[in-house]
Length: 197
Ligand SMILES: [Zn+2]
Image (cartoon, rainbow, N blue to C red; front, side, top):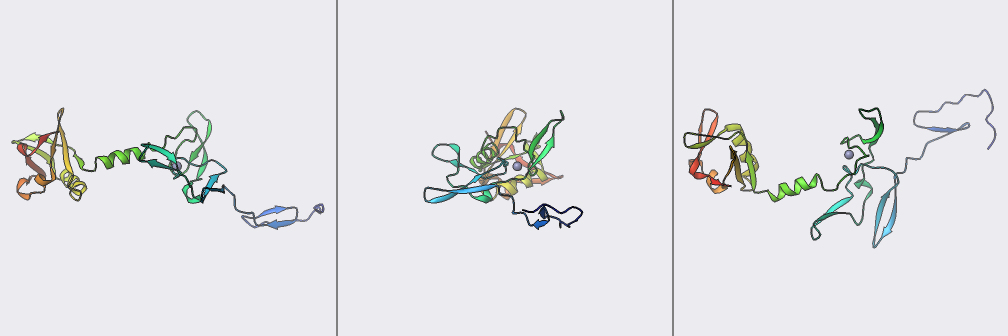
């Protein structure tokens, strides 16, 4: 390499690098490397990634726990990590997508657990704003419509809480138009159609 002659200006286009007078296109940053694992190739991270946005773990149904995937692909990683400053003025790494604080330990499945439990409750839909009146459970039409939208296709049982008590109504019951009384922007379902949940 020869010394850089003094007094010579070079133009470095945006996104390019320069070494002495030589302008070059930087190689894209490498975040991963891959290695054979069994009969496949797994991709490993060379840098921090957001554990929450990355898809590196999967739920093992037999063991009932989250485990790292056997083979991880490049696209499973989310490297969109930026520096952020917390309320105490401390700089920390944070995911720019989901704002996960990378100082925290991410418990795999903590979101998906919700999804899993939702799936377990796939036959349950809660209605909000239910109260008792005129021998019926009364709910705002909008709440009812919303519950129906969620529950109808999968024939879900609807759940409502009144005071401290929970009640349920089966799809077979609430899908009968005869059972639904609609007035004044509310839906009335007779109390005897409900069962204690
Ligand atoms: Zn994230």
